[in-house]
Length: 219
Image 1 (cartoon, rainbow, N blue to C red):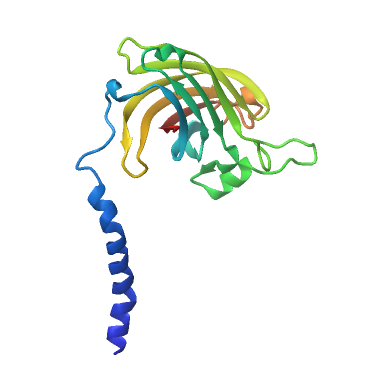
Image 2 (image 1 turned 120 degrees about the vertical axis):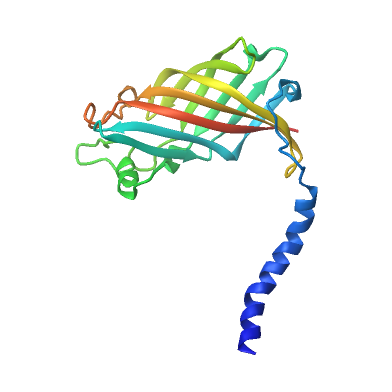
């Protein structure tokens, strides 16, 4: 009987999960629903799929190696017309408070409250979200890449930043039944431009950003 009890303890939940998941799995397409096909993109306003949006950051540590980190959960909108992609507009809010690194001590230092002098080394406690507002879109000759210029507001400072963007794919998300488009992007900023220059130049000033965001079309 104890052996039977142990089997039922683990086997029954697994069996129930399989029964629940079976209809969902059956509806999944045979291949990937998204493809790098511009013809699949339709005009309209899209919102960030916050569960599939992330910005990776990277900077050099004392000339020895690179420090890596991530910010997830971005929100915002994209206005897109494939007939006139240069008129596209994007507005993104970046939850700096969710920033993490691979080291808990470093992550804590980045959010360490201001000291007796009233200044924090980096963001301080409960930092406000950063924002990026596009000002222009220059589409590449290939039609699938673009330079998106805009204003980045971070840590109370606003500076112009250009993001090199590549179209990844478009299609209908079978889990949600909504049209989805996705892009990758890269950019480089100087942290000292945003009041985050602690330990420069011992620790690198240039921060490389790697961006991956999916957008879902509003009904």
